[in-house]
Structure formats: C-alpha cells, structure tokens
Length: 92
Image (tube, rainbow, N blue to C red; front, side):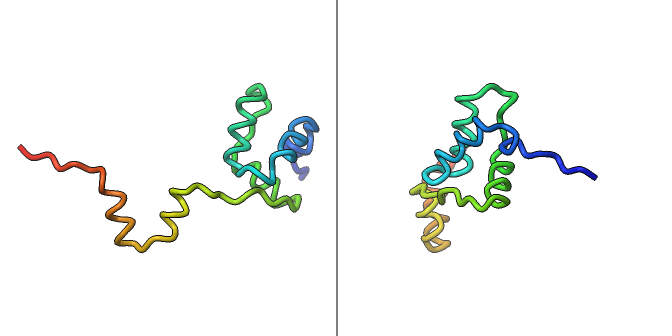
C-alpha cells in the first residue's frame, strides 16, 4: 500500500508560506490565510495542517485569544454567569 504525499510536501510554495507563519499563527489562522492567498485547489484543512506539523516536528503558535484564556482560567460558576449574561428572559 502506498501512502499519499501530503499537500505541503508536494507544494513547495505553499510549504514556504506555511513555514513563514508557523511561529506566530495558529493552524486555524494559517488555513484562513491560505484561503485568502491561494486558489481553492491548493487549500487545506486546519487538521491536515496540524497533522503535518506534528509529523514534521514543527510547533505552531499556541492560541492566545483573550476570551479563550479567560474561559480556561475562570471557575465554572463564573463562566456560567458570563456565558448567560447576555441572555434575556422573555415572558408573556
């Protein structure tokens, strides 16, 4: 059984584009940049990019979204209040 060649291994320009951004962007951000800079036949999924990074020893940037960090570091009850703060109760 032959293994399929990864898109980044076969496309040098796409690989160079990814490697330039791998230290400062998450896989999701990189795939969004790929979508805006390359035609659809060269796009790849976030999970494919992440798997390629793991296989080749590259470490993409960690997610630093403030909402995500706050969500991960606050107690469960505080998160629940924060998530439901914008909900409005409708009564008849």
